[in-house]
Amino acid sequence: MKTNKDSNRWQKLFYMLIALAKGNFSYRIKRSRYDDEIEAMSELGNMLSQDLQEIFSYHGFVNPRRTYIYLTKMDFYLDKELRIVNFSKEVPELLQLAPEKLEYTHFREILDSQSLQIWEEITPQFQEKLFKRFSLSLNFKTGKGLSIHSNCFVAALYPENVDLRFSVSTFVPVLLDEASTKLDPALSFILEKEEYRSPKIFHQNSDLRQTHEVRDYILQNLGNDTMNMEHLTKKYFVTASKLKNDFKAVFGTTPAQFLREERLKLAKELVQNTSLPLKNIAYTCGFSSYPHFSYAFKHVYKISPQQLRNSDF
Image (cartoon, rainbow, N blue to C red; front, top):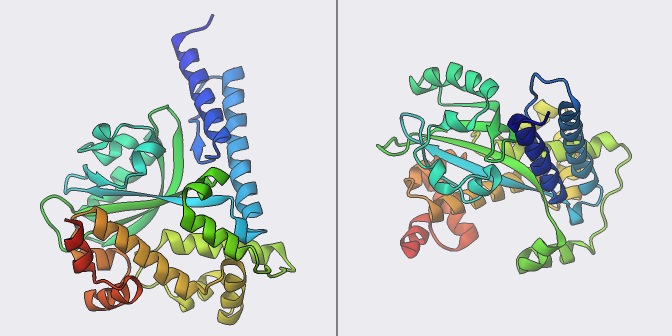
């Protein structure tokens, strides 16, 4: 006999298949205690989603000038009670929740039970300032009953103010379709320009995969002020020259240049779309000091962070 619970479980499976069809391979269905065909289908859906994510991630970088996967960033800004005060515009779409349902909601409310336990174990120490930042894996609940697994970076904001105390940042892979490039002339121009560049032939798939992993690691640790070539070479057990050459062959830039560019992109987004103090933004984006950040920002964008913020308000 079909029950309301069964209908709800079928609906979750339906939403996952729709997400897969749209190219979003990040969603997962939480396993239940049932032992039936719906549970079997749900597990197959999770396996398919994971396999597609891995296949497209690898295949997208075989021809790096036509990447199939891009990373969408989710940012949450929390108050001292760990309630969501602000968030990036992609969050409601990815979590399939209305913006008003996220505002001033406790961050724990969007986590599944397993992640909730981890979050509540570690955050009291963080709130007591026993450490300034940490990384952990979390499962986010969506409005459709699915979950998104992601590695998150949690940091204390500086200087503290009444409204904002902490940030939670993560990247979610999403498929880039042809229509997206047509809607974004700048992106389309870059792809067309890069088409003429001959990609390096990698003799081992592991080299290509590692280069991809280095890029993902950099994107997930933009706020880490110890991130540099020495850190990367030690982590991946590779020489600086090989890492630099492989990375440039795939992405057209060096790891150091890529890190700097992505930090500045993130900083520009925060300057334009949040009211965070500029010094706070500098430290959040991994810059050692505000003067260093301001100089790098103006060198790239031909305008200082303060001037950009003033022009937006």
